[in-house]
Image (cartoon, rainbow, N blue to C red; front, side, top):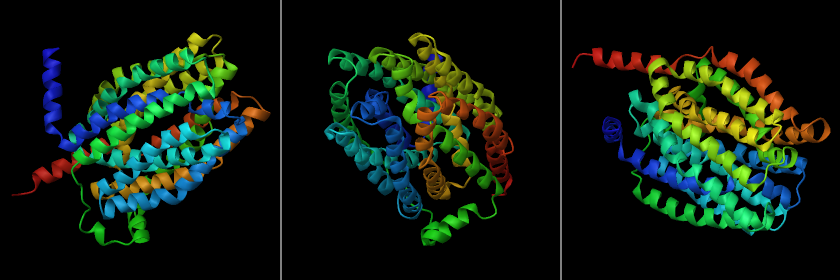
Length: 418
């Protein structure tokens, strides 16, 4: 234990101060999100939306993102990551407040749009800031550390949320609403502290002179691997966009999960991702990002198959525990995503990805709702497995290994005289 603590201490000391700030923010944000994330779709349904309307709300959010993603990425690279991050923090604070203040499902279009915009502002810029604050040799491990520490409160908050909802009478809009008020207060305090503590990260002088469209064009120019990665991202955006709004509704309405079960499901996911995030990050820093992603992918398929088959609520908990393995490898995915382009282009690269992802996510949840309503609620989940296993992962296998490229780059720099 003492040796492990010394290793962790030495690792943290090697990283820039922004990484420490982002980790503390991640811990607090994870707690607030853990209170609401398992109940958001159920809350929308309890306020009167059907599966197709639920999907339509998500589609509206993605439509707005289409026009926001690219400018945010350009702003981050041209002016300041911190400035772009501030916009995301404001949206993140307002989102739970608007959820709490809504009294009909139609009003939820505002917080749903804010939630979608948060995905392409706060989360995207946070990834770029995190990648920038980590050494190349530590990047996947660093993302693993970030995820591990930030997931610890997420093991607790879903259970707290389940107890609160149960204490207030069980699953209903009025029992869920206080969770959003609590999340608002935590988010407000955390965001203000993080913004004050973060150090400015300025743009590259060369990039700051590029125009909006020419800057995005230069990111993709001559890089065939980025186009393949975009295809993987687009397909992923579609299949996950067609299922994410419905998972908890499926667990509650089709499989009979109560508030406590939903809370334990979220805790199981967080527990597994907490345990394995650092080991998987270290594995990726040793054998490569691509190999690690492909090695762990079957856990995703088993998770969804178990969700569809689950004869009792306990199996839903096991399904989410397996899903935690996917979350554990997310830090590896983000590391590879960021390493595909030079440091100074990561904001626009993230904006490019999110722009295309948002376009695909407009129809995806609506299609998921239609499949749910007119064929079978399990069809979107089975479709996800087929597309991911037969199309996405084969494309990913043709991508260059970014860890190898980083090692080559370091070797070249060390061999230069002087």
